[in-house]
Length: 247
Image 1 (tube, one colour):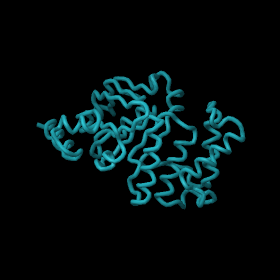
Image 2 (tube, one colour):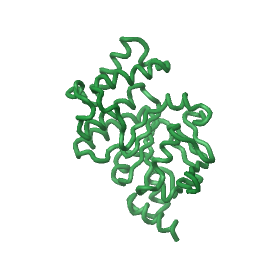
Image 3 (cartoon, helix red, strand yellow):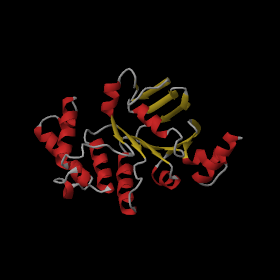
Image 4 (cartoon, helix red, strand yellow):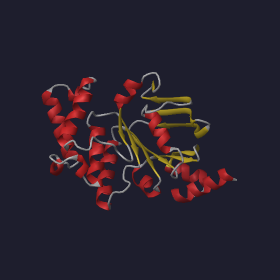
């Protein structure tokens, strides 16, 4: 589970997220929806302990991110919008290194040569990376780079997935493949996915958090959010709630 309690984040004198609280339940996919610049990535990086709250708290599986960053990082698989890789690595080389790093932290799924080999093989198959294992990362297409980003996030079998705009820039077939992976993961993991695509959220998410100018507008199941806004689709609900907030 992910829980934010009055999370705020400032950069200098600028407040980019203000007093945001919400919960992402276990075994469910939650969408964090907002326009570009709404504060979505700031929240996701806080959950992943890339930075810490200016005020308020974040908990992952009941542990404070600030007080237990090593434990919470180990529980999370993170897919960033623009993944950064060691570009000269071969794909297989990179996956082995990711597995080696997590093995050193005591991840049971990667303990021992046999377990690690089996896990890497399963990840390669899951994300259809067989054709590019001997290619250097800098040669990969956008679609394969995104698959590799998912592969590194899944390799240590995290209980929590944090996905930042996971289908941006992908073609329709790639989007369908990634959606299927996310939906399957949501059956056993806590998944928080940021997006500004309403259709994406309606397709695969059970819960919604609307964000606008760094503040929460609404939270709940899709039906609850639609009812609170008096709308019949998420796009209309977001527009109505945004206008209410502005006025």
